[in-house]
Image 1 (cartoon, rainbow over the protein chains, first blue to last red):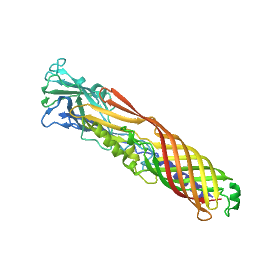
Image 2 (image 1 turned 90 degrees about the vertical axis):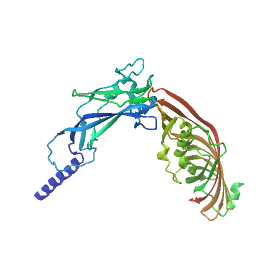
Image 3 (image 1 turned 180 degrees about the vertical axis):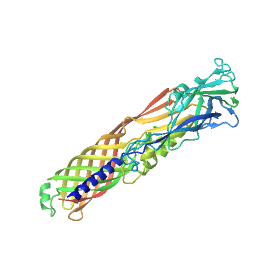
Image 4 (image 1 turned 60 degrees about the vertical axis):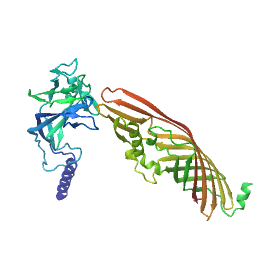
Length: 202
Length: 247
């Protein structure tokens, strides 16, 4: 009789464990990444897809700037929680990925300045950010709206760099050579800046 | 008169049959509307059909029949390629064209999956004379075709302009109320099996529309065009099959 009771208790515990393990997810390890530096390139979007211009001669209606953000891992956060059976876990039941990379900083501002005179309203050294847009979820959106979008969380693996393409949607009145300066302010008060190679817009 | 003939027959009057058959359906009206969306639908001018689920119950010479038939055509196999080519032809002078459509995923052609389905139900009148059987029907039912969505990204050559084109129908599954008079002549080859030839006429009003919308990704300004499919359709089916006499 006593052995029966013990068997029932052991069986019940085992069954409970089987049921519970189905939703006992591994606590995700959260890495932080930060933007280390940026690189900028002139884009030629006259074809089906934008390409980095090798000649730096681009049709004015198909001009764009590519910004490459180099990402660096800066910290690891891991939350440990107490469990009765820490060794047992299941990987279904909608468990979150075990590795996540979230942004440490966010972009506060993204500004484009024309070094040369762009048109009558945009003389040299003036801000032309409003003339560029980002292709985001099948829509062209302004740079202001782009930086308001939620930061990307990378799962399992952090890319070495991420690319952002900005497209000039109002071509300049003044064709010829142009240079643009990209300035990015991050939430940790760092300011990243880079200037494009001179590009001939024709 | 008919009853007296039946009474002399060596066979018992038929009370319940199943009647599988196969055949060909021809549309008398022309098929294409000439719209860019024509290949997004499963409407075809000529199809082969098969009736597997078909049964008739008789009380004396009157009865009631129900059947389902699947209709298919090999031409419906490459609907996505045809749609894609049509869109590319239309826009490739100025744009790089990337096409996608629901028929890209639903066109896995199988000869026994109907692209057009027909369901009919209604009264039947039977004349049995020795081994020969005549069936006259006046059925009502549904003819059902499918319509898929289509879309294309139009990237203007030499500029940053991108347009999104989409084609959507006002409803995905299109069921058309159908009048279906038909005639069958059969010959009893053995006691339980009747070889038969079927002649069906189908009359239905096809009525639906596709809306084409072209939107600029920058300005979100769009232009819409409506393609209205409206036609009174006449179809004829000729088929062969057999009746298995259950009772």
